[in-house]
Structure formats: C-alpha cells, structure tokens
Amino acid sequence: MQIQSASQAVNPMNTSEVNRPKGPPPPPREGGVPPGLESAVSTLSSEEQSAVTDMLASLSKDQQTTLKSQLDSLRDKGSSMSQEELGGTFKDILTSLSAEQSDSSSLNQVDVFA
Image (cartoon, rainbow, N blue to C red):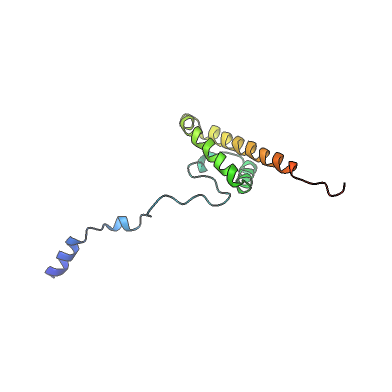
C-alpha cells in the first residue's frame, strides 16, 4: 500500500490536463466561418448566412489571405462594434472579395460561338 501512495504522489499529471488539446486550434473547415465570428454571422438572416458560407467556400487561396488580413485590421475596431455590425461588415468584405473573383474570372472567359 505504501508503494502505491508514493507512486501517485510522484505522478504530477493532473487529469484535467489530459483532455486539453495540444497546439493551436485547427483552421476553420473549408467554407466555414472563422473562429470568433460565429456569433456575429448568426445575427444575419438565414439567406445571408447561407450566402456567407457559399462565398467562403468559393474563395481562392489569395482571397483567403486577403480576407485574413482585412479581418486582422478589423480586430481593433471590432471590439467597439456590435455583433450585428461585425456580421454585416464581414459579409460586406466577403461580397467585395467575391465580386473581384467574378470580375477577374469573366476576363478569362472565351466565347466559343464567335
């Protein structure tokens, strides 16, 4: 009995630490809302939420990088914004990025009937 109690005292691992994941949080799934913006996006209408998800899924890697930098610059102002304002601003950023994508992709189209 004395050996068992000594081995428990030597083991410093706390059981609450076992369940904690190691490392940074995983990136959002493809087309998923970035962490921290879920509550802001939930203030949008269901149609707008669906549009946001669709726009996120269609972003290129360059557009994802641009979105991240714009969200990083918004972080300072975001603390003074309401969730509704933050959700609307996020949707506006996505809309402008998606518009840029459709503008650039239309330039690369070839009219096969000409």
